[in-house]
Every structure is written in structure tokens, then in C-alpha cells.
Length: 411
Image (cartoon, rainbow, N blue to C red):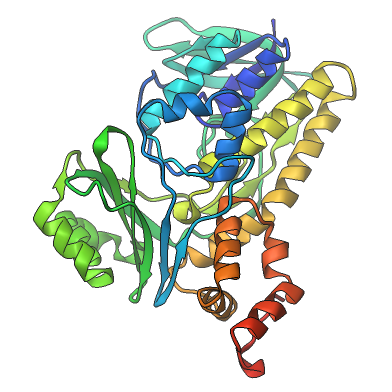
């Protein structure tokens, strides 16, 4: 009998399991994959997410894998250029983009070290209920017999297509259509490129960032209705977008870039919030709350809200309060804390700025102070309400002499 069973062992599930085990709880962690293994990802971990790894004693391990530190970011939004970096957050003065083959294995190993029972290559088939309450799971390792495990609580950390969510009947209460598709791969010969995130006219975007193994991840994004045309000539279409958005980068990609792995397509599901708590169960990570990868907040949010769920579960399991009440509070806190990131992501992932964001980002690009604040917002160190608040924007518009009739405010 376990205290908690966690289904899904990547960036949300392993931290939840590890943190609970460190508090003395008996935890089972299962995943249908074996590790190391890859999964589609932006790779990007914001400073706020790295601060969580630091608190857990894992940041040095990530850095020790040889993933390059990034301390300068280059953003372009259809003609608006903003370059720089945020102030340190809890002492973290860089960002990192580790391969998921590296990061996820590290997290699973940390869970094992904490005392978690880990079963890899395990496919969960069903959630077990008794009197309307989740009390365990059924499933099997590849080629093995069906197994059943019992627990006081079940956590679904099994991604946007969560089987746990399906089995407990978790309904969506916010849903926004996904706007784009992504193709990405890994290139050598471009080690000096650093991090670029450039959105060009014609509703298309490129991204580049260094990762493990001396390669750069290069990605392009376009609207979903252009997927068939792009797929007809992936190599040519990929190169064409770089040429159109940044001709200098396009030329260097053509002359020096060597693709080391096949292209990976990503057609993400809709942006959503799904009911993430119920009698004996909870959802965390993309299983309960998913947004477009454009802003790269998936891993960081998995860490942040995984830690929050672990804290609330510990309160319930230790008898400090009813466990279902504690987990309901987790979901409420997550929704409130993530709302700004969700709205910003849904908006700018359409690859064209609204008049509000266009006015704010354009003004910020002409202010050294607000450029620094912009990167603080991106890093998770400055709340959105602080950056986008009316008084803050009035000061920004005054500083860069934006005429009164061109000043745009939220709401």
C-alpha cells in the first residue's frame, strides 16, 4: 500500500514523487517509457524553474551535464527588437536548455535516490476506484501480467493526453485553439549562435538555443493551416523561414549548419485548463494545464506547480488537513498564479501581436529599465500585473515619449 502513486515520470511527475518521498511518504512512480528517452520539448528552463532545481539540490547536476549557460537573449517581434537578460532570481544568473534525454533521466534518478519505487516501461490501463474515490491503478509492464497497486492518492502527470485524466473524467473548463505547428532538429557548426527567438512578418517564427552535445536546437513555427505545404518540403521550408526572418542567420545555416538528427514535428493540442482534483486524485503538469510552447514555460511550470502539489499533498497525508481540501487549494492556487502566463502565451503564440502587446513591447524596447523588466517578466521574476499595470505603463510611455493617443493599456 502506497501513500501516493504518480503516473508519468518526466518534469512534473518525478519532482512530485521525489519531494513526497523526501517528506517520508511511500511513493510509486510509473511511466510507459524507459529512461533515458526523448520527448518533444522546447528544452528551455526559465530562471524561476532553475531556482526550483537549485532548492532541490539538482541544479549543479544539470550544469554538470555540460549544457551551455545562456546569459543573453535576443527577441524580435515583427520589427520590435529586445535583447538582454534578467537580473538573477534566487542567485540563478543563467538559463539552460538541456536535452530531455538528459534532464528526465536526472529527475527519475533523483526520485529513486529519495526512496521512490520506480517502474519503467509500465502502461497504466485504468484507475481503481472504491465508493467513488481513486484508490490505485492497474496496468502492466511490456509483455508482463496485469498488476494492481493501491494507494491513498493517485497523481496523473502523464501529459496533455493524460490517461489518468480520461479515467477520472476530468473535464476541460478553459480551452483555446492551438494556433501553430513546430518543426525542430539539432545542428552542429553553429555553436556561437546563442539564443534567438524571432517572429517575422508572414506569421512565422524561428528559435535557436544551445543544448547538450555541442549542438544547437533550431526550430521554426508557422500557422497550422500551412502544415501540409511545409511538410511537402521540410528541408526547403525550414531553410526558407530562416532566410526570410534573418537573412544573415539563413546564410550561415546554409553554409555551416549540419543537421545531426531527423526533424521532429510538434502539433500541440489546444491550450487548456482541465479539472485537476477530485476524490483521491489530482493532475499536474500538462495533464491539468497546457499551453503553447511559444513562451517555453512548460518545464518551469511543471516544476513550480509540481512542488506546490507535493506541499499540499503532504499537508493532507500528514493529517494537518483533509487531503482533498488541500489538493483543491493546489488547483486554485495554480490557476491564479498561471493565469497571466496562460493569457500572454495564447496571445503571442498567434505570431502577431495585439495592439496592446505591440504598444508595450515597442515602448519597452526603447527603455533600458523596461528592457530589463521585460526579461524579468520572461524569467518569472516580475509578476505580469507589475509589468503590465497601468501605473507602470504610464511611466514607461512617459519615459519614451509615446503620444497620449498611442498609449494602450490592458482591459
